[in-house]
Length: 395
Image (cartoon, rainbow, N blue to C red; front, side):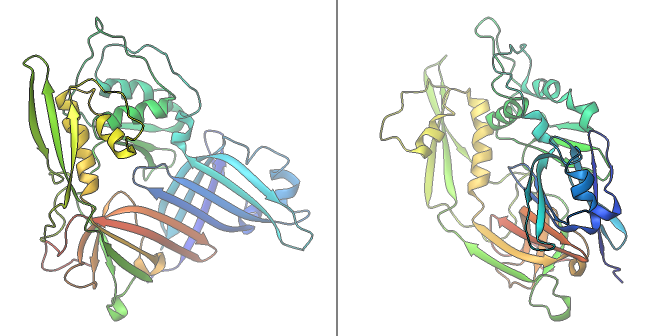
C-alpha cells in the first residue's frame, strides 16, 4: 500500500545539503520538465512571510544565487527518485501587502547549463574523430558536476585532414557538442542517475527501443491509473527521405533511400502508414547560395550538402526517424496512483485505449508538479504505427 509522497530539495555550490525544514514548509510547489531534444528545467515556488527564514537569511544570503546547484528528489512509497540535478539561473521575488501572499520563485536548468556559459569560438581543434572531441569537451565537468560521458560511436568516425583545413570550435561547449551530435543525426542531453551528484551526458542516437515502463491504463475501471489520455493521428507527418549522394571522385550521384525504421527506432505497431510526400537531401556537394524565396525547410535540406555521403546518411536517418512519428498522445496522471514517476526519453506501454492505440509509445516529455502530499505529471507520447505488436499489453 502506498504511503504517500515526500519532496526533498538540496542546495549548494557544488556539493549540496538539504534545505532547512523551516524553508521546506514554505515550499508551495516544485515543477520539473524533461523533454527529448531539449534541456531539463525546474521551478521552485515559496511563500515568504515578513520575518521567516527566507526573508531573514536566504534572500540576503547567497543560497539561491546563480549558479548554485539544486537537486530535487521525490520519495514515492519510501523509494527515492532524483527528478532534477540542475543549477539556478534566476530567482524572482514578488512582495505583497497581503499576509502570506509574497512569493519567491527559483528557476533553473539541468547541469548542462554550466557547459553553455563561455564562448570558445575560434579555439583550434585537433584532427581527431567527433567522439573524442565530445569526450574532451565534457572532461572539465566530470569532477565538478559528476558528469559521466556516454558516447556512442557514429557510423562516420571521420578524421578531418589537417592539410585541407584546421577545424575550430564554434560557440560554447554545449553548442559545440550539440552541433557535433546534429551532424551525425544524434542527440545530446544530460540527466541524473540514481546516485546523488552523478549525471550521465548522453551523446548518441535517440533510442526508441527497450523495456517499457509500467502501462498507462485508461478506461479500465479500478485499474485506470491516468487522469486523462488522448491521441492524434497526423497523416502528413511521415515523409519519404531520399538522399542524393554525390561522389566527386567519379562524378556520380547515387540515390539512397533513408528508412525511418531501424533497430534503435523499430516499428512500435503492426499497421504501417505509408508516407504521402518526400524530402530530397543532397550530400557531397557545395552549398549553393540561398534564394530569397527559399523556404526554411529547403535550407535545412541543403544544409547537409556540404557533408560526405556517410555523414549525410547518418544525419538523414535521424531526421527520417523524427518524421515517422505520426501518432502523438498527451495526458496526465497522479504518481501515487501510477506507482512511480513516469520518465521521459523512454518507452511506456498503453492499455485500454482500444486496438488501434494500445501498445508501446516513446515518452517525449514529462512535466512533474509536486505540492505537499501531491505528485502529478503531464506527458506527451509519440509512435510510428498503429495496433500493438503484442496481443497483450503487460501492466
